[in-house]
Length: 452
Image 1 (cartoon, rainbow, N blue to C red):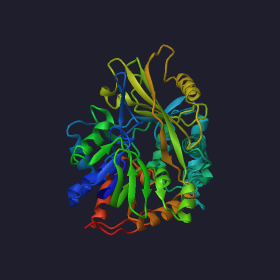
Image 2: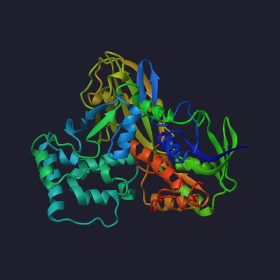
Image 3: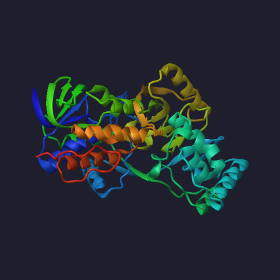
Image 4: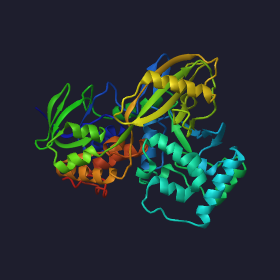
């Protein structure tokens, strides 16, 4: 039986980062087991017919000084900076993102409803009582903005009544323009960039795959094992069964798999943990990638679609991130549809609905010819922040801490995050395992003894 100090399940950005930082900071050679044939997980790129398709839009928003230095060092000179061009398509018009600060161009009645509702919240503010997203939206943005964007778009994305959605996730992801900005954005086209993703970086060549590839290249030979899916984890004996490797005895285990999938492999689990596990909810993102034989289909980076008549909630133009992603004379798009996790979906029927919606909205012309198409579903696309999510995660992580398990990243940490944060999760995990950092508070594993 092979023995390791640290076993890491998943060779995505979180797992690779944890292994890299354990090696850099503590000379610990963790073993990373990745079920796919390449590193990266959902931060990977697939090639087809001369096109490169990411698992939907994976853009680099760099805010942390260390994260920025590391990522740019990994990419070397293979990156370009972009000023975001993101829009909303509703009522037959394109308006700039975010909706709440950019209603200019919509029908006059809609603009009036949005302004009236918003300024009622400014002059007669009320606090949301139960912290549901719907109530928060109504109290923060008013009836009009909520009716025309916040409610329909978020119902489309989260796939549940918004009275059951908390506000824990939204933080930096939902910009909150001030009164003067809301008014200006109703009277004229406002080119102010709101939010955490006003600009982004993206590789010039190779798609987002080059980032996990560069991180994996900094590990020692043999540290990363691909094609090695985890099959079982005995939490009491600290033994994992991995395809292509067999049984592994570990001292510490780091999970980056979706938390619901990891728990399905684990035994024994207390009744309270099993109960909490059953309350975790997620949405699946069905991502249809299209290669179109027409260059310059749009100058936009991505567009949001709040209206029910379109099955997709977002369309992105990947070939505007990098010309390397599509052959000359072509454009590439990714189209995202959300469904509740675990529900069956008829992909051919959904594909036809998507194509009809793309034509109805003017994205595709009748003369357009498809060069290729590729479905890349993301089973756990979004963790659902209902009112069961946080107490359930707290219960699970408290137990995992008692059996020397860390669960990190977007999926292991069961949260809404982006790539830089995922890489920093790996760094912080390594520091905790080495005893050189304090474990964060409520939504984290209990204290672990540091590696010696």
